[in-house]
Amino acid sequence: MSIRKQKRITSRAIGLAALVLSLAVGATASAEDAKTQYFPLATFRVGAYASSGIPVWAGEIDYFRYINEVEGGINGIKLVWDECETNWEVEKGIECYERVKAGKNGSPVPIFLPHGDPISKALTEKSVADKIPLVTIAYGRTEAIDGRVFPYSFPVVFSFWSEASSAVNFIAEKVGGKDKLKGLKIATVYHDSPYGKETQVPLAHLAKTYGFEDIQIPVPHPGNEQSAQWAKIRQLKPDWVFLRGWGVMTPVAIKTAAKVGFPVDHIIGGIWSGSEEDVRPAGAVGKGYLAITPFPAGANFEIHQKLKKHILDKGLSDLKDPKSFGSVYYNSGVDEAIVAVEAIRTAQAHFGVRPINGEEAQWGLEHLDLSEKRLAEIGATGLQQPLKLSAKDHEGGGAGKVLQWDGEKWNVVSNGWVKSDRELLLPLIYERAAAYARERGITPRDATN
Image 1: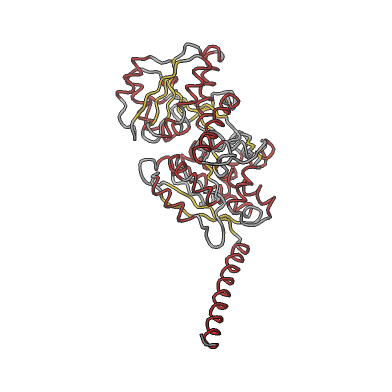
Image 2: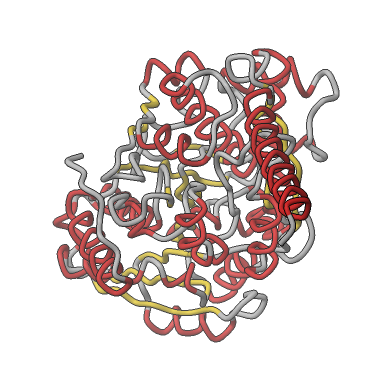
């Protein structure tokens, strides 16, 4: 090879190396110079569950706008977001995740909000590989409470197991104590999907512990025909029905229950069967229906007065139907946004005030402490339960409030937050997480709390 040719090759190599270095430095500088924090939103504004989803994002986006407009962002870092339509379908949810995971305009993705139980489960291993936390408030894989095995999955606030346990504990309050549960029949009418089946294990364990009969009755998706299921209810005569529906399934269940003569005030809807959108279509027969939720309805919380003044009254709200302001689903969006924002704030306190990446947000989530004092500062006292997460506990709350529909609005009828039997259920949850780890060859992280 000639000396001249060697020089050309060397020159090209140096030039290529300089280009690669320039791109790398440029990417780093872009991330450092970014003044915004990107939050991609996986939404479903169309499809069978759109009526549920639309108010959720109204609450979430309104809170993000409030943080930007009133507080100037999270310590000066403004929030930006865009939406990706999933239609609540797993394939589309995965496509959305893959599309957004690299971040936007130099801002990394700190947290991904799947907004769908099947989507969240499909993304469990991807999120670990990409180091992007999945925050699934009141849904998601229950064993992911054990962050030693699931470092990037956060079924925060109220898992499905806690939902089932709190519902049973509310029934115990109504009948005079847990000892009075013995001999009762509790039927669960559930959406026949992994989501709907999620409470079968804890209910079987609680039934064995407290002596009630556990009856399980599936309803095929989407649940617009339930005559056979409620005929079985009429035949079996349970004392209480725990309704774990979604979308159209809930009002159909309420109306069909009325037809067979089952008292609606002995039906307790689960988290996703307890919104205004669930009971209004049922009409007059829905009066008296109960539901358990970590997102109590109402627009009288302090944060709602702030949102009304600074966002709604200024025409900045994402809300299309004013009746949904303060609804269960709207409030769930507000709660979700509070958790996300406070996790970023916690991470900033440790890593510095700048856009936070997924690995840093994971640290922020595992050190999140939403105390009564902090909730009061936010204006969310009574709307959000106190919450403290750790590497060993990615749920942190485990309580809900029971609401009753009076024909026009929800009223809280439980004595404050109804706690679940977490001490009873956590050993089972940790066993399931350990089995998952063995099956997939995962070495759990060390964590003392």
